Image (cartoon, rainbow, N blue to C red; front, top):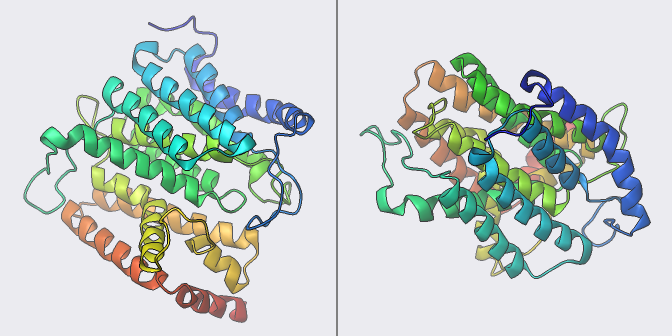
Length: 359
């Protein structure tokens, strides 16, 4: 069943973009009026209070535009329900800070909704080792839930610089849409329009540029966790039957590579140091650029470029006939190498400083 179509699906992205651009200033004023702001201090580097309401605007617009451009309620209700749960717990955490266990519980609940009710399941992982598709069989549901929850937290942990989490997500969406376009899957392509437009509208206020010297709004936990959930939904949807298979699972692993490998490296480093894996610090990949002397804008640009190149490798190499097992082997070597180097962050910092000296 579809709602009455008020927005033509071909312009849904444009409508979502304009809606976010117009609504965001109003949402910012309301956030300041009611004290819903992220104040500076501690590990936070921003100098002024900034409302963390970006995700609330992005996903509200995405869902409304999506429904009124003809998206099927039967297909999308699990995603929207899971997203609403994530937005609620994320907003509470942004406003008053809640127990991490409450956040994790709600992440698992929301993920279970999209995996079980929405059938966003990883039934197989493709031909990772050259012996045919690696089927998950009975562990498909628990594996899918754990994978989605981990990715939600990976995007959440990458949200450390202006425009970073949103920019990485935008790059992932670009490759997903390009794959749909080249495959001729226009319906899948159009389903991504509302999120693409809404996220682009948010980046106008969050990504540093000649017209935005500093972020005037943050994603917030509602936004970063929501992006993880939504991207996971679409990535699974485009790689698994019974839907048209547009991308191989290993291509998705490359599209999502930077958030995944950096999160794994941080968990490894913290556990080796006797810390809780989710204990906050400034040891993420993007922090190494800052410690080396890059500006926030320069650091964000470098990380976004690396993430975009990873996406191009994952999609392009498969299209050019590179075997899946080769990409899998390189991916494994890459994550192990990053874990080893990240154990001592000064290695990355020293390497990046060379580029500051030469510039």
